[in-house]
Image 1 (cartoon, rainbow, N blue to C red):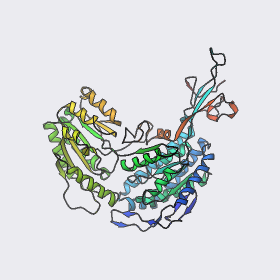
Image 2 (tube, rainbow, N blue to C red):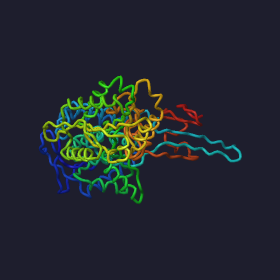
Image 3 (cartoon, rainbow, N blue to C red):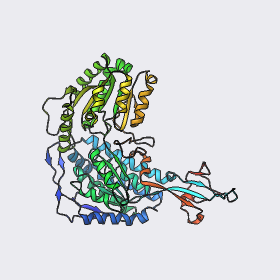
Image 4 (cartoon, rainbow, N blue to C red):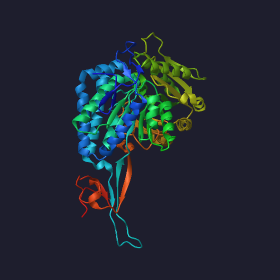
Length: 527
């Protein structure tokens, strides 16, 4: 049941007078539930509870944390149709998307449960003492990862489940041993409260400390700003715009004790189409990328917003086919009138740039909040000179850059800001374009070969991040079990009595985890 209140640990609270409602973009009306924005007192209470919970939660065993994570997954599934119905009413997204995203959210939670139950993720490294080493004795040094402390997670507008209340940031922080305070996204506050109730139930059933989780409502930026500035908050997870992520990064850096902000932000995900592929597969490529550009109304961070090719008849033919194919696709609803408005504004700004040619712009009347897709094209030299053309248009929009040769293609890529993905479309020719591959590698976090970038597989090898502004720290991923590394720091014990060491570092290895002992990977005891 949706109450519209904040969760301060296990307690519902609505002390404030500022309220708001979510919006149904399909029906173009407000939803019925009223939500209470968190007050300063409620923010402070949530953080204080998290700080107190951290004292014990940081020492919770991997098996207990696994039970907690699995219980969250179970409780989310138990919400059943109510969750799906609210999700759809707040996002305008179809039921199939809602159920698919719920499945991904549950999978992420169970993946982290499996990771922490095994325990080897702590990267235990042991270098035993050598007392008779000359000229100086070698001390006993043992290292492992330990949690940072309370983490603030900002819900994402475009993924009400998988990147929000119990999404990857929250799941990975819990797995690391960090309490989480979610700043719920105002566009899907009802979905957020339902999921928050599932987390609270799971915490109670598995005896997690009160304050291990809180969920705070906010219609604007004030709650988020206060959370990031609070001295007991030790890290931030964010998925959203460059403007929002950069603002959080700057505020976190201005604190007396600066903290890390792991933000995944804008990306136009360049797609390089090499000549042989265009000559051989123009029809199929046009259909594939028309679908990719419009998938989810273009509201994926991996949407292919930029296509790069070498000028010629094959590229011209492809552009014509892409324009035809994208106009065959019926427009769909965006997440919110504000997002639709931003799309229209950013699209208009792009279309107003000099020397840009519009090759497809859906012109038929559509319902309110439905996005009209567009394809544009521009010369390589113009694109390099005009950085306005480099900016993301969040929605079903893409630009084809026509380069004079591969050198100019390399220059286009090299002049891009950091991106989440890059794609190479090639037929038996990739080896001739090593400079292009290297340029992509220098600007992106993941390179796709002969595929569309939309779709992010949740697995240990996935890197969902990239050079700024794709993310604020390109050394980390926001997807997959390795995203846990954002919420920990390495910590060493020197010459510590064995009985006082954590189980992960004891000679007997009671957890039977895989460790590095004197540069050898082993799960054996130290004799």
